Image 1 (tube, rainbow, N blue to C red):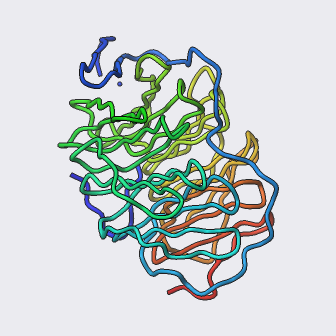
Image 2 (cartoon, one colour):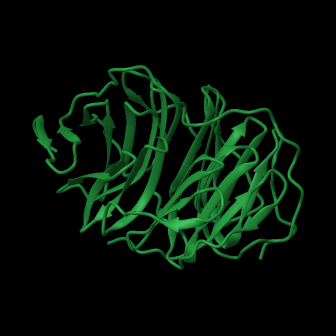
Length: 343
């Protein structure tokens, strides 16, 4: 069972066999072929808006380690972290918002000003209604690590339950649960629409796995690489995954490839894509890398804190969060702390 220790976790079954989970309504297909979506994407992962004014430097909001960030617009961004920490950005100021829990929160997805989801340890699921966070029905008794949705009636959560990976889908009334015996974990989930959803994680100590939902079944994709921590993209033919102690991998619509990249030390925890030629990845010891369409380049930062989450609205409006309440902002020319001082 994973353990939170101030630096967060984020995070192929045999010959092709279809496993139908009667209580889930989701069919899991395990095989080695590449999976492709049967329908066009219906909603992008990121929402691109006009660049807002540069954020005002402010005093630290929290000293808690921050695990993930997600927003619906430049003035509606949520961050979650240890001990139930939730922060909100309204376009001007970061504010601490009571969550009502003290459990470590690991994932967040923002569907709109009146709809956000946060998940974490101890089978915690919280939902924001525009006014406050409230406990919501949990899909699992395990650890929920990643959450993503295409609408308020289509939300996916992944994690670890009883030492095995699981994926659950909220249909507006109930969770549909599917467990993967023999597969250790899912760390992240992302999609382009309700019929194109991807989940990534660990297939073993030294290998990762990728499953893709095509509107009918969750299919295992062929992948040969280390455990995976996060996934993001701009469309079904432009998807990035970052790994534990390994290079970034890219899905070009046909196959996974490893583009040129600077050496990666430690683990990359998150990735965010603004466009085919504008992708960011972050990780341990303040690592930050940028893809410009030709190669990945390391981007030195004035921090050694582990960076856990990335999200933005435009090429000149990108946020990163991490250890000890770290909140960084990229304005198109450089990264800088959004805080007057580090706690």
